[in-house]
Length: 85
Image (tube, rainbow, N blue to C red):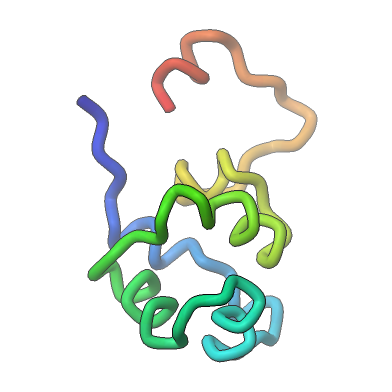
């Protein structure tokens, strides 16, 4: 079974590049700034229901969030790659 790396996930969150504070991101997602802090430090993961709003707020795809890295936008994923996610 595949398990997400919390540290990698937290390191990928691009909130600072968007010049957004933890509090601003938290307000957009209706969570506490402490929750955002825990995600970024790799102590916790956001609830699955927050993945789409989080991706939208950060300007990345859900796939990029789950992979913890930017994905080439012109490169479609094949079935094996999708299954691995």
